[in-house]
Length: 257
Image (cartoon, rainbow, N blue to C red; front, side):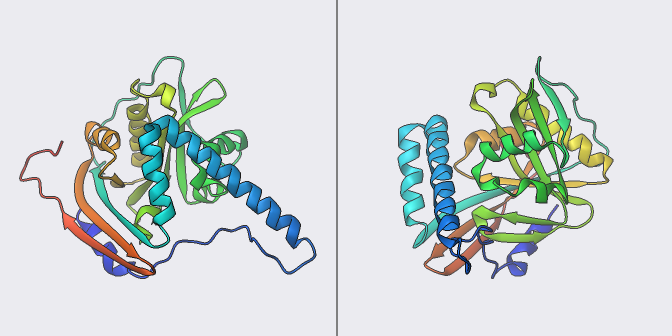
């Protein structure tokens, strides 16, 4: 489980992928497309503001807003990486009452649309991710109330602006989300356990994920379901210069809390 440390040298000059919808085009409909793109981005920003206000309150919203305004010039954050060895383990297969958990595929267009509305950074990306990954989704009726999106082969970590080529027995947790009204009901744990079982069926032995060190609920969930924290990555960006510093987390035979 110590392979994460090699990511630094492999990806030191990666750049974030560009928005796939152009603001300017070379044909006569460029103004229409530009206006549509602007409207789309405004809608995404408004949705993100509402979600952050709902999840983090006014202070959290203002903090994130300040970080967003400064990110062109200055970014500093610490990302905590965790992993779990899935070999020779059994996991619970329970779900909260009235909740149905299952895998989705590229034909589940309504579920995909709901997922992309829940996490705006995934807009237009879920179909592509499903071609080299999987998604376990929790439903309340036809409503998506939570999901865990997983990738194989190649992981991109936006918070570090970093790509990682995965080995055949490895997978990366791209995103786990549960609607606020359904939190503290063991739903996130149920999603994780179902993902663990699905990955075992596919021969995956090591499952990675990560979160900001400031995201305490996410770290508590990771520890609760069996992940072990393995590294902290400090990301610093000043203008166009990037730096990542890696610190291995040693456990000394004690489980990190």
